[in-house]
Length: 233
Image 1 (cartoon, rainbow, N blue to C red):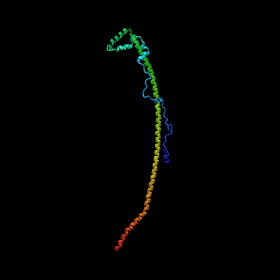
Image 2 (spheres, helix red, strand yellow; image 1 turned 120 degrees about the horizontal axis):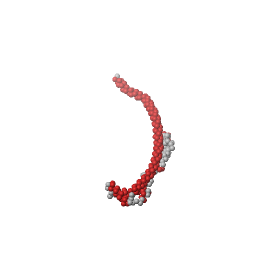
Image 3 (spheres, rainbow, N blue to C red; image 1 turned 120 degrees about the vertical axis):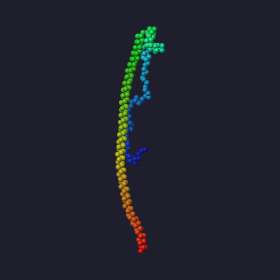
Image 4 (cartoon, helix red, strand yellow; image 1 turned 135 degrees about the horizontal axis):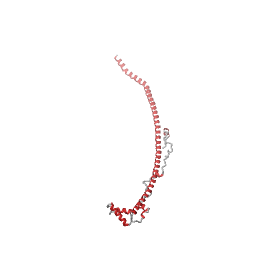
């Protein structure tokens, strides 16, 4: 509804937002699209880590022709037949099995060393990749933090501007209220003076009438007394 001319005269000043760039359309701080589309859950690793068997296979260890390897020895030691036996007894059992298979202890130790070397090499490569991945995420988090601080500063400035605008309008309204109070006091004083003068004039106009009424009352009271006096003579 449009304001009437009378209302415009009574209140020509209307509150308007600050003539700032974000007056009609707030100038929001741009945010990267990748930062907006946040996934609901953490992504899966880019590639699954290899199992020990896959590492051995990739290193060519499983292609050895020996019937016995370190894994076979581990299986023997965990067998229910000898795992509860004393350590020396289990060692003797392993050596007897190796002699029967025609495999030397050095071959078993070399196989174990090759497996350990393959695992350590794979671990080293994965450790390096993880450190690079972690460093990238640290840089990304630092960039996100800077973006957050920039956005927070932007909106803090907008909030402060709004508060300043409200304070300015509040002060203007209080100034108007003070002027209105003075005007009301002047009007009240004038009305009071006019009321006292009207009462005084009314009292002055009524004085002759009251005097005549009092005189008439006095004459009426004196008349019967004289008549009574005459009769007594």
